[in-house]
Image 1 (tube, rainbow, N blue to C red):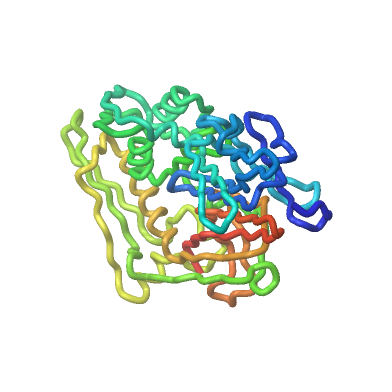
Image 2: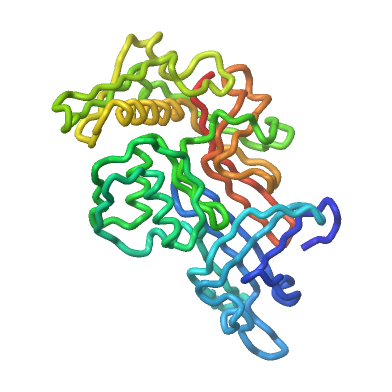
Length: 352
């Protein structure tokens, strides 16, 4: 890669050791996808032919064996920022007539350890946040969790991977499950935080395609359950105007949909709701999660190594309706040996 201070720069470490110079010279491209809702992944593609030794130096080396920890940092000149820490899970050589052989090294973030085997077990009187901490520890990860308060009498993990199980528990209360470096996060979306960066359409952002849809938006969401101990119904309702945040907008999607089309609501039943506190938590989390789909979109810009999924950015230059704070649900980095470094974003917003 170009060593000029303004040129894109790359650093790859395997098990903590900087990639050897001959491997660095052979790197053709690097892609990193960080996603809140799916396994984050990386690929590193290298030239895989040594004409002096008539050998395939990287597919036959011990540098990229399965399980190797790969830490990728991107930036400009000497200003590098970590964008992915994961483990090698696959090697994909390509032998094509008329072209030099290549090797693509593929890997995933440490979340993949939670998706390796299906389990059946029961947790008794254990908070979801404590379950997340326990499963993270078993996978060799540190956990940062937001206390979920209520401890259900029992919870069954029924022939599910740990990741499937945690995602299901998180969805019930509007939480997210993702891993950054070797830390598992189990928490509500962080879309109420202040923006970490400001991007402008036409000046940094080369393409921005937001979509506003009021179709799934409703102004009321109710959770209904049954308190077995007290033998009574448990009901909690959240209405438009009680969202956790408007992300700096004047009106949320649920409120605007109610004004335009009349009041409408959804009801969640069939889920275990042991008490009112749990019902309130579920109603709030599910309502906020639905509201955050009001505006979705994609943006592409010059490489931005500081941007991470789970953060908020301010997008300007898109008019009154579509400018504002957006929550990053996915960040993709792509860097080629020709010093072309691009970042693609998937964004969400709950208001205008």
